[in-house]
Length: 237
Picture 1 (cartoon, rainbow, N blue to C red):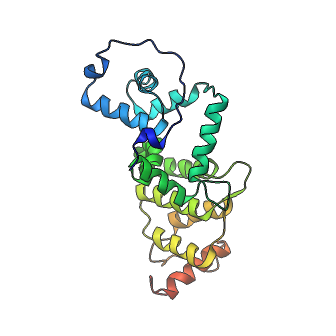
Picture 2: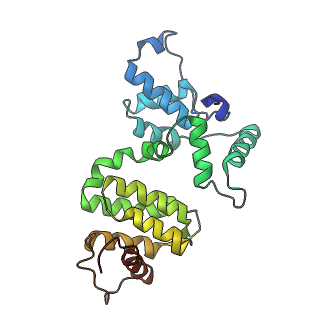
Picture 3: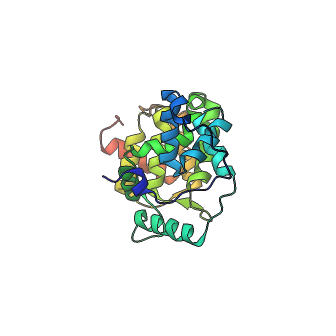
């Protein structure tokens, strides 16, 4: 399997850096060395740029991402060409996006689990996801963050990935059934209304559906999901 250098020929400039002692690598603790290598593997930055970002953020890796990406990133024509080549390597052959399969290949090249890349950016939210109000805010933010710019909805596989990620932190027992239902019966993009109403359903209707109101103002898709659960004998009608 290719190593990270082979997988990511793009080097992201990050300002100037005054070279520390030649022995700087040996002066880092093992934990900080691991953070440095993790930062490099995810961003494609040089070790010097990674060290600068991590030091600026007091070795908090999530904050270091923000520091790194908030800086101007000048790109030469060669950089843009390599960036285009990298994108083309992983993008879906039938659309101008990197979808689930492309992400899987990318993660394989990086030798990381697919969820790890997303989790690194969202890790600072994990403790807050246990709080209902914070979860609500993060959940609603995730729709605008994950959808393609200029689109009012996002791809089904993207939505499923986000639901599985978010509800892994705040368990909803029906999430896998919901995802299976969408793949079996829906197979279309997910609108903002569906995204928002699903959370309301998960928050207010218990997993046995004993308090589900068939005459309520639920979207058609959620009513169909309830019928799907009955048809599959997941819950008793």
